[in-house]
Picture 1 (cartoon, rainbow, N blue to C red):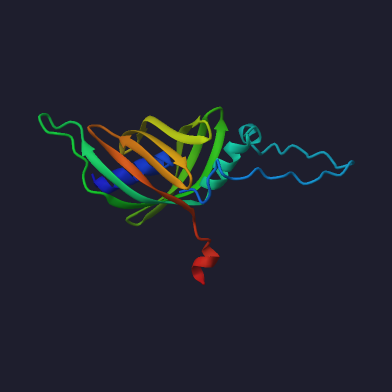
Picture 2: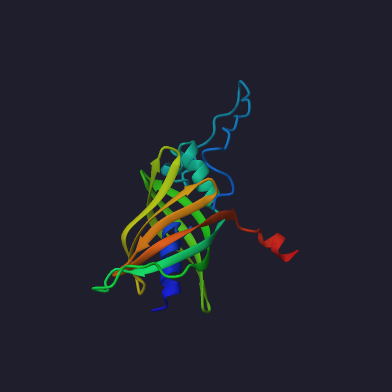
Length: 192
């Protein structure tokens, strides 16, 4: 199987696999606009998940910053299952991943939808992950997720100050990844 594809899918799954334009921690709190005394009450939209409505400020910022993001960086791989050989990381290889959306589905559970372009295919892959927090720093965790044809992967990736960094592994191999998160260029801008 193509090792680049394995690394790509793993990173996408972690960020799905997915550099923040501004730091979550350094983003100043936004002031709420003044509310009129007789403001009408907002109707509840039944189509919205209750998890999205229960997000705190840092979770909303994380979802906003990952949605429509591009992760550009490098990954390096090593093998764990070569008896008698010293474990060494290989050379850094460039990668680029697009995150379509980051949606909280309840508790610590999220769905990161990543765009994967491979050969003649262009698909959006929803990946269930868990997001845990170290103070103001989100970490995407993926534990033994089996993806058809691609295998089973685990990963841990943190996001801080516009960068991501993490580790990933599959059956007998794994590695490290890091890079920067930016917002994807809008299709209208790309045509100019």
